[in-house]
Length: 104
Image 1 (cartoon, rainbow, N blue to C red):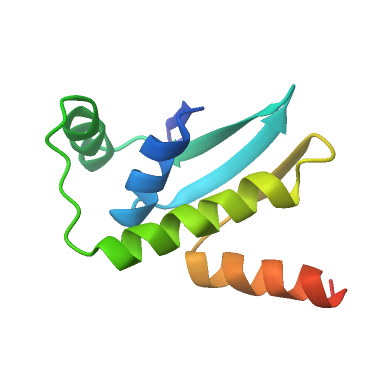
Image 2: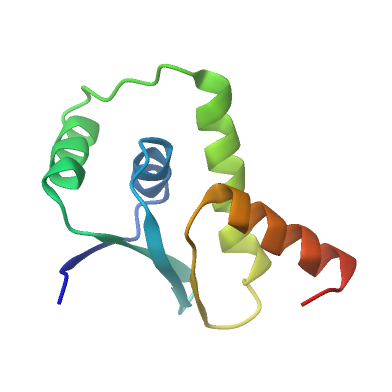
């Protein structure tokens, strides 16, 4: 079984997604969202970079887009405790757009 890394740090989670670390699940509970990723050496390196202030953003517009997508995750399911698997920001955008149109 693969180990997972979980964080409630929204900006770290956004940075990891921006750096192509797959968001496995997110769970909303008691007013905050916990993001889960597969534990890998790359994830550990990126987390160290982020917290040591060595993180680099090469494309500011893409990073902003990632933050907006992550905010969608948090705010779409704010009303209740919720867990969802997410595999890519494209799938997330499709899911969000379908919810907006009333589709399932």
